[in-house]
Image 1 (cartoon, rainbow, N blue to C red):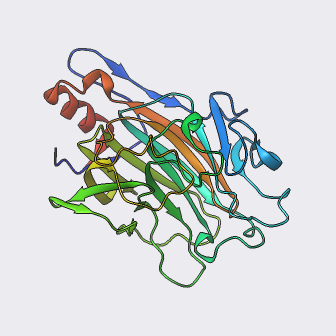
Image 2: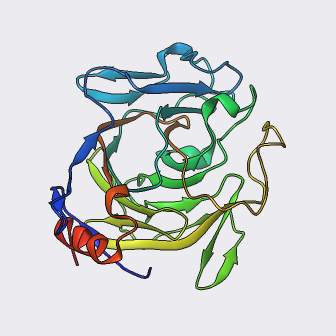
Length: 272
């Protein structure tokens, strides 16, 4: 399905009366419905209160870390999704933790179609997933956001299997601590689009398990060539503090098998 669309935050209904509304995955109060997995720690151990709620924001911070020590972390929503629009509003704050990787300066991400946290190895760095990479500028240089990275995965672009680990989007650079809205359209394994300010900045198809760029995983989980049509959503801790003020989802499952109504639904909740 080669539909390029840009989003507005509203609700829509199809011609048969089915109404789909935004689901607030983050309730603004606590981390109910989410599970933490930090490298070198068991599932649900939130080392150093890395993930917490501050002033109504889902916050990632590192005050308890002497050094980062490659303790990459993720917080997983406890339900799998397949066909949906994910809306995020984020900002980078503060300074990167001591000995965080240079490439992780103002770097975080949203992982899509990911494995369950319970299936990750104790020392695994990233879940096998599709990453919508979130980047902030350094105040001077150009640096796009809503890029694509592929820990243990590949995608297809223009009928070609892409094995590069990261692909830059066409977005502009966002410097400082400004809030940025990113919407991701996910239609199972048929299409994923990254949208910023009403513009599609990246699109690809057929997300699938494959390649490298993930370590410490159970080989039995990494079945190369398997198409990813559903999975878990997670947010990263990658050594630079970040806040999310909104994590919301529009479930498209009710109209996924009805192309005409799916198109109508998308047109009601988006603008070209």
